[in-house]
Image (cartoon, rainbow, N blue to C red):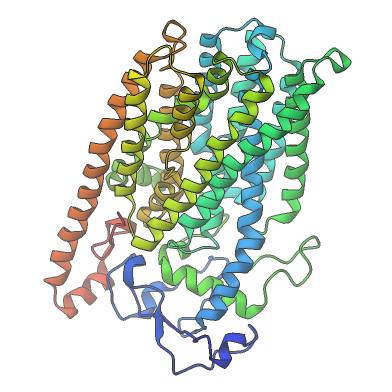
Length: 546
């Protein structure tokens, strides 16, 4: 299944390090860098190129070349270009998602509940409606994206939810609040797995976790920026007889709508389809760069050449992807790992207000938590890539939350407001390994069809966990929420055991396959590769990351 694809790497003193990308690689002396094997390998090593040819309908087939070589310097330069052209804009779009779904937190600090005659339980119900709607929109959105292409569907989503987000400025009570939260979630649902699918067209499996850490850092950077925006916009309370939170919804919804229109023209369908009137008639990349992009992605994960980027899934393929039991341990993680610190994040502004801080102090005091979140997200993604570790990092996250939850449970009722602020801030800034788990979901799927569905199902489990977490803090338990924190501590303890169990499962799975594979002769391996009907991660030569 796997050929030994190599690229001649150039040293820092080599002339080829400054070779133009249109020129062929001439360095034949430096050490070879293997783009398939090593820690990022997906399949066991078999020296045969023909098993990696993409399907005839693959959009980058004209750039696929099994004999093509490039230098390490060329690839690094190209990845930097991809980070600037693709990753940065994806982060900007994610910024807009969080701006419109997260500004409810700033609106709460400006007395939204009192203005609409709502209670904390009504707020919880609204959040539950949001997460349920988001959950049920995930898979349909991903299927539409696979059929139309993420470059088409994502801008449609953005413009649609921006209209709903802005219309929240006209909320009148419980019914309109519930309706808007549901509609907002319907249009936002699926956006995250859509973005992950899109980014997988450009980045390898080893590069994706770090890019996703940028993605979720942008998510929390939004919280910092929105806190400053709220600090100014909420001061408009009374202007034209409107509450500050109404201005907040209207103006931030408008901003997202403008970005959605820009995305219609900006996003290219694939690495080899960047030419357009907006992006330039020659596109962003020359022929050599396109060949590097296509060949490095296919050699890293040959399953990415199994389908066209606008090819939908049949019912049979959808069923097979859903019943891929080797992905279920990751789905089980998605159902609970985020719960222990989610209420702290959702209720951060309400808790700060209950501690005696005013509207503007409350919004500014949330910033340290979001800064800590970003730093931990980037640090743990780097650790994951540096040491090739995933699930054990989740144990660290849950242990972090467990210690803080125990502190919150036993903290005296008359403790200072600043002590509670420190605990809340550290809970919100707990190491966030969502990018790592999302990337391993994509990596362990083993095929485009499973990747499409698995990303959606995992995110559905995450949304389900959000439904659970949004109902843990109750009115009769405030303001200390001791009962809720005890429940959260129990879930954190369960998650620690679960992370260890999931890692052990994939280690056992790999060892079992490795034992069988190594017992086969070369001719038996060749016969298996020639005749097998196994697909994706069900192949005997597939190895799971953990």
